[in-house]
Length: 471
Image 1 (tube, helix red, strand yellow):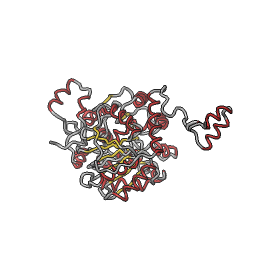
Image 2 (cartoon, rainbow, N blue to C red):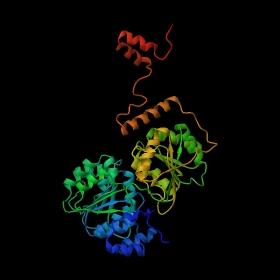
Image 3 (cartoon, rainbow, N blue to C red):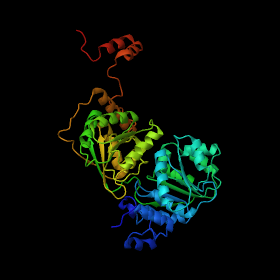
Image 4 (cartoon, one colour):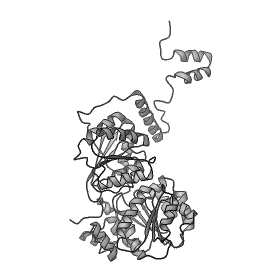
Protein backbone atom coordinates (compact mmCIF):
# COMPACT_ATOMS: atom_id res chain seq x y z
CA UNK A 1 0.00 0.00 0.00
CA UNK A 2 1.39 3.36 -1.03
CA UNK A 3 1.92 6.06 1.55
CA UNK A 4 -0.60 8.89 1.25
CA UNK A 5 0.07 12.56 1.98
CA UNK A 6 -1.86 13.03 5.24
CA UNK A 7 -4.75 11.00 6.57
CA UNK A 8 -8.12 11.31 4.95
CA UNK A 9 -11.70 10.13 5.21
CA UNK A 10 -13.49 7.88 2.78
CA UNK A 11 -15.55 10.98 2.13
CA UNK A 12 -14.16 11.39 -1.41
CA UNK A 13 -17.42 9.79 -2.55
CA UNK A 14 -18.94 13.21 -1.94
CA UNK A 15 -16.95 14.75 -4.80
CA UNK A 16 -18.94 16.07 -7.70
CA UNK A 17 -17.73 13.67 -10.40
CA UNK A 18 -17.61 14.41 -14.08
CA UNK A 19 -18.59 11.42 -16.23
CA UNK A 20 -15.06 11.08 -17.55
CA UNK A 21 -13.72 10.73 -13.99
CA UNK A 22 -15.90 7.82 -12.86
CA UNK A 23 -13.90 5.14 -14.63
CA UNK A 24 -10.68 6.70 -13.30
CA UNK A 25 -11.83 6.29 -9.68
CA UNK A 26 -12.96 2.75 -10.35
CA UNK A 27 -9.43 2.00 -11.52
CA UNK A 28 -7.76 3.49 -8.43
CA UNK A 29 -6.15 6.65 -7.10
CA UNK A 30 -4.02 8.89 -9.32
CA UNK A 31 -0.35 9.56 -8.72
CA UNK A 32 1.35 12.94 -8.62
CA UNK A 33 2.82 12.11 -12.04
CA UNK A 34 -0.74 11.73 -13.38
CA UNK A 35 -1.42 15.31 -12.24
CA UNK A 36 1.54 16.50 -14.36
CA UNK A 37 3.39 18.00 -11.44
CA UNK A 38 6.65 19.78 -12.34
CA UNK A 39 9.89 17.91 -11.70
CA UNK A 40 11.15 20.29 -9.00
CA UNK A 41 7.92 19.92 -6.99
CA UNK A 42 7.82 16.14 -7.60
CA UNK A 43 11.33 15.85 -6.19
CA UNK A 44 10.29 17.75 -3.05
CA UNK A 45 7.19 15.57 -2.65
CA UNK A 46 9.22 12.38 -3.04
CA UNK A 47 11.73 13.59 -0.46
CA UNK A 48 8.85 14.14 1.95
CA UNK A 49 7.90 10.47 1.38
CA UNK A 50 4.56 10.92 -0.40
CA UNK A 51 3.71 9.07 -3.59
CA UNK A 52 0.00 9.62 -4.16
CA UNK A 53 -2.25 12.67 -3.73
CA UNK A 54 -5.13 12.88 -1.31
CA UNK A 55 -8.65 13.41 -2.70
CA UNK A 56 -8.56 17.19 -2.11
CA UNK A 57 -5.20 17.41 -3.89
CA UNK A 58 -6.31 15.20 -6.77
CA UNK A 59 -9.41 17.30 -7.38
CA UNK A 60 -8.15 20.81 -6.54
CA UNK A 61 -4.74 20.85 -8.26
CA UNK A 62 -6.08 20.61 -11.86
CA UNK A 63 -8.82 23.16 -11.09
CA UNK A 64 -6.36 25.68 -9.61
CA UNK A 65 -3.99 25.20 -12.53
CA UNK A 66 -6.83 26.02 -14.93
CA UNK A 67 -7.00 29.51 -13.41
CA UNK A 68 -10.55 29.46 -12.01
CA UNK A 69 -11.51 30.59 -8.50
CA UNK A 70 -11.79 27.59 -6.16
CA UNK A 71 -13.73 26.95 -2.95
CA UNK A 72 -12.16 23.99 -1.14
CA UNK A 73 -13.92 22.28 1.77
CA UNK A 74 -11.83 19.62 3.48
CA UNK A 75 -11.42 18.48 7.04
CA UNK A 76 -8.26 18.99 9.06
CA UNK A 77 -5.44 16.64 8.05
CA UNK A 78 -6.46 16.05 4.41
CA UNK A 79 -3.55 17.88 2.81
CA UNK A 80 -5.36 21.02 1.66
CA UNK A 81 -2.25 23.18 2.24
CA UNK A 82 -0.35 21.22 -0.41
CA UNK A 83 -3.48 21.25 -2.59
CA UNK A 84 -3.08 24.99 -3.17
CA UNK A 85 0.71 25.30 -2.82
CA UNK A 86 1.61 22.74 -5.51
CA UNK A 87 -0.23 24.49 -8.38
CA UNK A 88 0.81 27.90 -7.03
CA UNK A 89 4.50 26.97 -7.14
CA UNK A 90 4.07 25.60 -10.67
CA UNK A 91 2.30 28.81 -11.75
CA UNK A 92 5.04 31.12 -10.44
CA UNK A 93 7.87 28.90 -11.80
CA UNK A 94 10.83 31.04 -10.71
CA UNK A 95 11.85 34.17 -8.81
CA UNK A 96 10.79 37.41 -10.44
CA UNK A 97 10.94 41.06 -9.34
CA UNK A 98 10.79 42.26 -5.74
CA UNK A 99 7.06 42.42 -4.98
CA UNK A 100 5.04 39.35 -3.93
CA UNK A 101 2.96 37.66 -6.62
CA UNK A 102 0.95 35.46 -4.27
CA UNK A 103 -0.38 36.02 -0.76
CA UNK A 104 -1.63 33.31 1.61
CA UNK A 105 -3.69 34.66 4.52
CA UNK A 106 -4.04 32.55 7.67
CA UNK A 107 -5.71 33.42 10.99
CA UNK A 108 -3.00 32.76 13.60
CA UNK A 109 0.75 33.03 13.99
CA UNK A 110 1.03 29.32 14.84
CA UNK A 111 -0.73 28.38 11.62
CA UNK A 112 1.34 30.91 9.68
CA UNK A 113 4.54 29.25 10.91
CA UNK A 114 3.22 25.79 10.04
CA UNK A 115 2.11 26.85 6.55
CA UNK A 116 5.43 28.61 6.04
CA UNK A 117 7.29 25.41 6.89
CA UNK A 118 5.15 23.44 4.43
CA UNK A 119 5.96 26.01 1.74
CA UNK A 120 9.66 25.77 2.51
CA UNK A 121 9.53 21.98 2.04
CA UNK A 122 7.70 22.22 -1.28
CA UNK A 123 9.91 24.98 -2.77
CA UNK A 124 13.17 23.29 -1.75
CA UNK A 125 14.23 22.61 -5.35
CA UNK A 126 13.10 25.95 -6.81
CA UNK A 127 14.51 29.45 -6.51
CA UNK A 128 11.17 30.93 -5.44
CA UNK A 129 11.52 33.29 -2.50
CA UNK A 130 9.10 32.97 0.39
CA UNK A 131 8.50 34.74 3.68
CA UNK A 132 6.18 34.33 6.66
CA UNK A 133 5.00 37.35 8.66
CA UNK A 134 2.79 37.45 11.77
CA UNK A 135 2.09 39.42 14.92
CA UNK A 136 4.10 39.23 18.12
CA UNK A 137 7.32 40.28 16.37
CA UNK A 138 8.27 43.88 15.53
CA UNK A 139 7.01 44.71 12.02
CA UNK A 140 10.36 46.29 11.11
CA UNK A 141 12.00 42.86 11.30
CA UNK A 142 9.47 41.53 8.83
CA UNK A 143 9.95 44.58 6.63
CA UNK A 144 13.68 43.78 6.45
CA UNK A 145 12.85 40.14 5.74
CA UNK A 146 10.82 40.91 2.59
CA UNK A 147 12.90 43.88 1.39
CA UNK A 148 15.28 41.82 -0.81
CA UNK A 149 12.26 40.44 -2.69
CA UNK A 150 9.63 37.75 -2.14
CA UNK A 151 7.43 35.70 -4.48
CA UNK A 152 5.03 34.02 -2.01
CA UNK A 153 4.07 35.76 1.22
CA UNK A 154 2.33 33.87 4.05
CA UNK A 155 0.77 36.32 6.49
CA UNK A 156 -1.74 36.96 9.23
CA UNK A 157 -4.15 39.80 8.31
CA UNK A 158 -3.04 42.19 11.06
CA UNK A 159 0.67 41.97 10.29
CA UNK A 160 0.11 42.25 6.52
CA UNK A 161 -1.94 45.39 7.08
CA UNK A 162 0.87 46.83 9.27
CA UNK A 163 3.40 46.26 6.49
CA UNK A 164 1.12 47.75 3.84
CA UNK A 165 0.43 50.91 5.86
CA UNK A 166 4.18 51.31 6.44
CA UNK A 167 4.69 50.95 2.66
CA UNK A 168 6.97 47.98 3.30
CA UNK A 169 5.03 45.78 0.87
CA UNK A 170 3.31 46.40 -2.46
CA UNK A 171 0.33 44.47 -3.81
CA UNK A 172 0.66 45.64 -7.43
CA UNK A 173 1.97 42.29 -8.70
CA UNK A 174 -0.44 40.01 -6.85
CA UNK A 175 -1.86 37.34 -9.19
CA UNK A 176 -3.17 34.87 -6.57
CA UNK A 177 -4.81 35.37 -3.18
CA UNK A 178 -5.38 32.37 -0.90
CA UNK A 179 -7.49 32.56 2.25
CA UNK A 180 -6.86 29.46 4.36
CA UNK A 181 -8.99 28.41 7.35
CA UNK A 182 -11.74 30.80 6.26
CA UNK A 183 -14.10 29.66 9.01
CA UNK A 184 -11.54 30.53 11.67
CA UNK A 185 -10.89 33.89 10.00
CA UNK A 186 -14.56 34.73 10.42
CA UNK A 187 -14.66 33.49 14.02
CA UNK A 188 -11.75 35.79 14.86
CA UNK A 189 -13.39 38.84 13.26
CA UNK A 190 -10.97 39.36 10.35
CA UNK A 191 -13.60 40.04 7.68
CA UNK A 192 -13.27 43.88 7.83
CA UNK A 193 -9.51 43.61 7.25
CA UNK A 194 -10.02 41.15 4.40
CA UNK A 195 -12.47 43.57 2.77
CA UNK A 196 -9.80 46.28 3.01
CA UNK A 197 -7.36 44.03 1.15
CA UNK A 198 -9.92 43.25 -1.56
CA UNK A 199 -10.22 46.98 -2.32
CA UNK A 200 -6.45 47.35 -2.70
CA UNK A 201 -5.48 44.16 -4.56
CA UNK A 202 -5.48 44.04 -8.37
CA UNK A 203 -8.89 43.07 -9.77
CA UNK A 204 -7.40 40.58 -12.20
CA UNK A 205 -6.31 37.75 -9.92
CA UNK A 206 -7.16 34.18 -8.95
CA UNK A 207 -8.86 33.67 -5.59
CA UNK A 208 -8.70 30.46 -3.57
CA UNK A 209 -10.78 29.95 -0.42
CA UNK A 210 -10.16 26.92 1.79
CA UNK A 211 -12.06 25.95 4.92
CA UNK A 212 -12.40 22.91 7.14
CA UNK A 213 -16.11 23.60 7.66
CA UNK A 214 -18.79 25.18 5.52
CA UNK A 215 -21.46 27.21 7.29
CA UNK A 216 -23.62 30.20 6.39
CA UNK A 217 -20.86 32.71 7.18
CA UNK A 218 -18.34 30.92 4.96
CA UNK A 219 -20.95 30.70 2.20
CA UNK A 220 -21.56 34.46 2.42
CA UNK A 221 -17.80 35.06 2.35
CA UNK A 222 -17.43 32.89 -0.76
CA UNK A 223 -20.12 34.91 -2.59
CA UNK A 224 -18.30 38.14 -1.75
CA UNK A 225 -14.77 36.88 -2.39
CA UNK A 226 -14.99 34.42 -5.32
CA UNK A 227 -16.10 34.83 -8.96
CA UNK A 228 -17.97 31.81 -10.35
CA UNK A 229 -15.93 29.37 -8.23
CA UNK A 230 -15.49 25.65 -8.68
CA UNK A 231 -16.33 23.89 -5.42
CA UNK A 232 -14.27 20.96 -4.16
CA UNK A 233 -15.58 19.01 -1.16
CA UNK A 234 -13.94 15.74 -0.23
CA UNK A 235 -16.02 15.01 2.86
CA UNK A 236 -19.16 16.46 4.40
CA UNK A 237 -18.42 19.65 6.31
CA UNK A 238 -17.20 19.01 9.88
CA UNK A 239 -16.48 15.30 9.37
CA UNK A 240 -13.54 14.09 11.51
CA UNK A 241 -10.98 11.70 10.08
CA UNK A 242 -12.01 8.05 10.21
CA UNK A 243 -8.74 7.02 11.79
CA UNK A 244 -9.63 8.87 15.02
CA UNK A 245 -11.18 6.80 17.81
CA UNK A 246 -13.50 9.18 19.68
CA UNK A 247 -14.62 8.46 23.25
CA UNK A 248 -15.77 10.40 26.31
CA UNK A 249 -16.01 10.06 30.10
CA UNK A 250 -18.79 11.52 32.22
CA UNK A 251 -16.90 13.37 34.96
CA UNK A 252 -18.72 15.24 37.76
CA UNK A 253 -16.35 18.15 38.39
CA UNK A 254 -13.05 19.93 37.80
CA UNK A 255 -11.06 18.12 40.50
CA UNK A 256 -12.17 14.69 39.30
CA UNK A 257 -11.16 15.69 35.77
CA UNK A 258 -7.67 16.44 37.09
CA UNK A 259 -7.55 13.08 38.85
CA UNK A 260 -8.66 11.29 35.67
CA UNK A 261 -6.03 13.07 33.55
CA UNK A 262 -3.30 12.03 35.99
CA UNK A 263 -4.68 8.48 36.05
CA UNK A 264 -4.57 8.18 32.25
CA UNK A 265 -1.15 9.77 31.83
CA UNK A 266 0.47 7.15 34.07
CA UNK A 267 0.48 4.88 31.02
CA UNK A 268 3.46 6.50 29.30
CA UNK A 269 3.64 3.86 26.56
CA UNK A 270 0.04 4.34 25.39
CA UNK A 271 -0.13 8.09 26.01
CA UNK A 272 3.19 8.76 24.33
CA UNK A 273 2.51 12.20 22.85
CA UNK A 274 -0.54 14.10 24.10
CA UNK A 275 -2.25 17.44 23.53
CA UNK A 276 -4.66 18.55 26.26
CA UNK A 277 -7.12 21.26 25.20
CA UNK A 278 -8.49 23.47 27.99
CA UNK A 279 -11.22 26.08 27.65
CA UNK A 280 -9.58 29.08 29.34
CA UNK A 281 -6.10 30.40 30.16
CA UNK A 282 -6.88 30.17 33.88
CA UNK A 283 -7.91 26.52 33.65
CA UNK A 284 -4.90 25.75 31.48
CA UNK A 285 -2.57 27.13 34.16
CA UNK A 286 -4.26 25.01 36.85
CA UNK A 287 -4.08 21.86 34.74
CA UNK A 288 -0.43 22.52 33.92
CA UNK A 289 0.45 23.09 37.58
CA UNK A 290 -1.03 19.73 38.64
CA UNK A 291 0.24 17.68 35.70
CA UNK A 292 3.73 19.15 35.99
CA UNK A 293 4.01 17.71 39.50
CA UNK A 294 2.33 14.35 39.03
CA UNK A 295 2.97 13.13 35.47
CA UNK A 296 6.17 11.83 33.89
CA UNK A 297 7.82 13.38 30.85
CA UNK A 298 8.40 16.94 29.72
CA UNK A 299 5.34 19.27 29.68
CA UNK A 300 4.71 22.70 28.16
CA UNK A 301 1.80 25.12 28.16
CA UNK A 302 0.47 27.41 25.42
CA UNK A 303 -2.05 30.23 25.57
CA UNK A 304 -2.38 33.83 24.38
CA UNK A 305 -0.68 35.32 27.47
CA UNK A 306 2.54 33.46 26.70
CA UNK A 307 5.23 35.36 24.80
CA UNK A 308 5.91 34.64 21.15
CA UNK A 309 9.30 32.98 21.77
CA UNK A 310 7.81 30.81 24.56
CA UNK A 311 5.03 29.62 22.27
CA UNK A 312 7.36 28.84 19.37
CA UNK A 313 9.82 27.02 21.62
CA UNK A 314 6.99 24.91 23.08
CA UNK A 315 5.67 23.94 19.64
CA UNK A 316 9.15 23.10 18.31
CA UNK A 317 9.95 21.02 21.41
CA UNK A 318 6.66 19.16 21.00
CA UNK A 319 7.37 18.51 17.31
CA UNK A 320 10.85 17.21 18.05
CA UNK A 321 9.54 14.76 20.65
CA UNK A 322 11.28 16.43 23.59
CA UNK A 323 7.89 17.36 25.06
CA UNK A 324 5.47 14.54 25.82
CA UNK A 325 2.46 16.61 27.00
CA UNK A 326 1.31 19.94 25.57
CA UNK A 327 -1.45 21.83 27.42
CA UNK A 328 -3.11 24.54 25.37
CA UNK A 329 -6.20 26.58 24.65
CA UNK A 330 -7.77 26.68 21.17
CA UNK A 331 -4.87 28.85 20.07
CA UNK A 332 -3.27 25.59 18.82
CA UNK A 333 -6.35 23.80 17.47
CA UNK A 334 -5.22 24.53 13.89
CA UNK A 335 -1.59 25.50 14.22
CA UNK A 336 0.15 22.22 15.00
CA UNK A 337 0.96 19.64 12.35
CA UNK A 338 2.82 16.88 14.17
CA UNK A 339 2.93 13.18 13.28
CA UNK A 340 2.45 10.47 15.88
CA UNK A 341 0.28 12.39 18.35
CA UNK A 342 -1.26 9.46 20.20
CA UNK A 343 -4.04 11.32 22.04
CA UNK A 344 -5.98 14.53 22.05
CA UNK A 345 -7.74 15.12 25.38
CA UNK A 346 -10.54 17.68 25.65
CA UNK A 347 -10.33 18.69 29.31
CA UNK A 348 -13.17 21.13 28.49
CA UNK A 349 -15.45 20.82 25.49
CA UNK A 350 -15.25 23.87 23.21
CA UNK A 351 -18.24 26.23 23.22
CA UNK A 352 -17.80 26.57 19.45
CA UNK A 353 -18.72 23.06 18.36
CA UNK A 354 -16.74 23.22 15.11
CA UNK A 355 -13.55 23.72 17.12
CA UNK A 356 -13.98 20.14 18.33
CA UNK A 357 -13.25 18.90 14.80
CA UNK A 358 -10.10 21.00 14.59
CA UNK A 359 -8.89 19.93 18.02
CA UNK A 360 -9.18 16.20 17.40
CA UNK A 361 -7.69 16.66 13.94
CA UNK A 362 -4.31 17.13 15.61
CA UNK A 363 -4.14 13.32 15.96
CA UNK A 364 -4.44 10.62 13.26
CA UNK A 365 -2.29 12.63 10.83
CA UNK A 366 -0.05 11.27 8.07
CA UNK A 367 -2.15 8.08 7.84
CA UNK A 368 -1.62 7.24 11.52
CA UNK A 369 -4.32 6.33 14.01
CA UNK A 370 -5.15 8.33 17.13
CA UNK A 371 -7.58 8.69 20.01
CA UNK A 372 -9.66 11.70 21.07
CA UNK A 373 -10.87 11.66 24.68
CA UNK A 374 -13.36 14.19 26.04
CA UNK A 375 -14.05 14.80 29.74
CA UNK A 376 -17.69 15.87 30.04
CA UNK A 377 -19.24 17.37 33.17
CA UNK A 378 -23.04 17.79 33.56
CA UNK A 379 -22.96 21.31 32.11
CA UNK A 380 -21.19 20.04 28.97
CA UNK A 381 -23.54 17.19 28.10
CA UNK A 382 -25.71 19.38 25.86
CA UNK A 383 -22.55 20.56 24.06
CA UNK A 384 -21.61 16.92 23.51
CA UNK A 385 -24.99 16.21 21.88
CA UNK A 386 -24.55 19.25 19.61
CA UNK A 387 -21.08 18.05 18.60
CA UNK A 388 -22.49 14.62 17.75
CA UNK A 389 -25.12 16.30 15.55
CA UNK A 390 -22.40 18.33 13.83
CA UNK A 391 -20.12 15.37 13.06
CA UNK A 392 -23.09 13.07 12.32
CA UNK A 393 -21.88 10.27 14.57
CA UNK A 394 -22.24 9.10 18.15
CA UNK A 395 -19.24 9.31 20.46
CA UNK A 396 -18.80 6.26 22.67
CA UNK A 397 -18.92 6.62 26.45
CA UNK A 398 -16.32 4.90 28.64
CA UNK A 399 -16.98 4.15 32.30
CA UNK A 400 -14.70 5.82 34.82
CA UNK A 401 -11.96 3.55 36.23
CA UNK A 402 -13.12 1.71 39.36
CA UNK A 403 -10.08 2.87 41.35
CA UNK A 404 -10.29 6.53 40.28
CA UNK A 405 -10.42 9.03 43.15
CA UNK A 406 -13.88 10.61 42.77
CA UNK A 407 -14.27 13.98 44.51
CA UNK A 408 -17.63 15.34 45.61
CA UNK A 409 -18.72 18.42 43.66
CA UNK A 410 -18.49 21.59 45.73
CA UNK A 411 -21.66 23.63 46.14
CA UNK A 412 -20.23 26.62 44.26
CA UNK A 413 -19.20 24.53 41.24
CA UNK A 414 -22.55 22.74 41.25
CA UNK A 415 -24.36 26.11 41.14
CA UNK A 416 -22.17 27.23 38.22
CA UNK A 417 -22.98 24.03 36.32
CA UNK A 418 -26.72 24.42 36.93
CA UNK A 419 -26.67 28.02 35.74
CA UNK A 420 -24.79 26.99 32.61
CA UNK A 421 -27.36 24.27 31.92
CA UNK A 422 -30.11 26.88 32.32
CA UNK A 423 -28.29 29.25 29.94
CA UNK A 424 -27.98 26.57 27.26
CA UNK A 425 -31.64 25.61 27.62
CA UNK A 426 -32.72 29.25 27.30
CA UNK A 427 -30.76 29.50 24.04
CA UNK A 428 -32.58 26.44 22.75
CA UNK A 429 -35.95 27.60 24.13
CA UNK A 430 -36.36 31.34 24.92
CA UNK A 431 -39.51 30.58 26.97
CA UNK A 432 -37.57 28.36 29.38
CA UNK A 433 -37.36 30.04 32.82
CA UNK A 434 -34.97 27.65 34.50
CA UNK A 435 -34.14 26.79 38.09
CA UNK A 436 -32.80 30.30 38.81
CA UNK A 437 -35.54 32.45 37.30
CA UNK A 438 -36.50 33.79 40.75
CA UNK A 439 -34.51 34.27 43.97
CA UNK A 440 -35.36 31.76 46.70
CA UNK A 441 -33.18 33.30 49.39
CA UNK A 442 -31.32 36.57 49.58
CA UNK A 443 -28.33 37.15 51.84
CA UNK A 444 -26.04 40.00 52.95
CA UNK A 445 -26.06 43.42 51.30
CA UNK A 446 -28.43 42.30 48.54
CA UNK A 447 -30.99 41.34 51.20
CA UNK A 448 -30.77 44.80 52.81
CA UNK A 449 -31.20 46.52 49.44
CA UNK A 450 -34.18 44.37 48.59
CA UNK A 451 -35.76 44.96 52.01
CA UNK A 452 -35.53 48.76 51.60
CA UNK A 453 -37.40 48.52 48.30
CA UNK A 454 -40.24 46.37 49.68
CA UNK A 455 -43.48 47.54 51.34
CA UNK A 456 -43.45 47.07 55.13
CA UNK A 457 -45.64 43.96 55.18
CA UNK A 458 -43.67 42.38 52.34
CA UNK A 459 -40.36 43.10 54.10
CA UNK A 460 -41.63 41.33 57.21
CA UNK A 461 -42.75 38.36 55.13
CA UNK A 462 -39.37 38.25 53.40
CA UNK A 463 -37.53 38.16 56.74
CA UNK A 464 -39.34 34.99 57.80
CA UNK A 465 -39.20 33.22 54.45
CA UNK A 466 -37.43 29.86 54.64
CA UNK A 467 -37.74 29.35 58.37
CA UNK A 468 -40.52 28.55 60.81
CA UNK A 469 -42.51 31.60 61.92
CA UNK A 470 -42.69 32.19 65.70
CA UNK A 471 -45.98 31.06 67.30
